[in-house]
Amino acid sequence: MASFIMAGRKQAAFFIILSTLLSLILPPVGLFSGAAIALITLRIGWQQGLIYTLLGSAVLAIVTYFFEQDASLGISTGLLSWLPIVFFASFLAQTGSWQGTLQALLVASLAGVLLFHLYEPEPALFWQKTLKQFKPVLQEIYRLNSADVDKLIADMVGWMTAIFIAAIAVTVALALLLARHWQAMLYNRGGFSKEFRELSVGKTPALVMVVCIVLSIVMNSTLTVEILIIGVSLFMLQGLAVAHSIVYQLEMKAGWLIALYILLFVLLAQMFVLLVAFGIIDNFIDFRAKIAKTDQN
Image 1 (cartoon, rainbow, N blue to C red):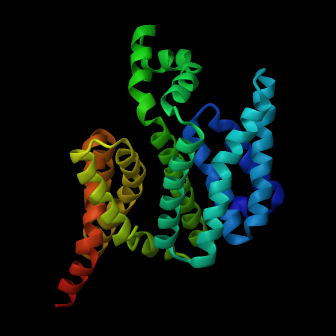
Image 2 (cartoon, rainbow, N blue to C red):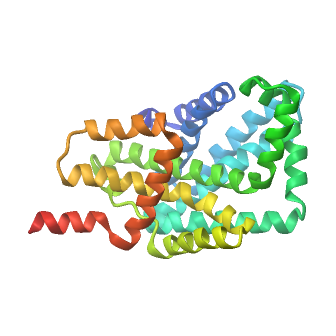
């Protein structure tokens, strides 16, 4: 994929348009269009990344208009999805620091929550109105009746601001990781593996997460819970990085990682919490450095 994307402008445009269209049927495929834009930004620059962002957004606008929907919805969806990827891919290219990039992404996400609350004093009402537009889709997906869907929406609206922004943050992070993997395949074989194994969000954000956990228990604060929802997804990535590093440092078989991902798929909630915990604690204990020191002794 990476070589095809970087083969020329026509190939890159074709890949982004195709993956954008396929994402309308299979949403996870949208990650590939984001990663392609991130790869172009990392390798060529933010100007080219912006051009392909506008191209993908135009495609979404045409599709939404074709289905008799507001074309501006397609444009806003594309820009909201890909502009952050261009920005943070450019940031990563300039700094070369994953920790700095993840911290900037976390700060921007938290700022997004605060700005949304300032702009929308009644976020629950906003999300209730928004989610009701998707009521038929939710009924079809979850096989629920109308009353059950209304209850599901009522349960979700309180946390939708954080969930929505956290989804954008995770999509950006995953797109950058995939793009960096593609970039390493083309120009720096094996470089990404080392980068990922060293991935760390940082001690200060980890301390903020610990404080928010305590405050959410003691005060039952909505804001602290929203911060946690956004932060835990990034620390889950650090937890995965720690697992990869431990397997590599101890020269364990790849089957351990395969088992980890199977468990993550089967026991999503439990494994997610476990990986987040490892990701946060690692910033204070540094499991990877301790294992390296043990190996040297």
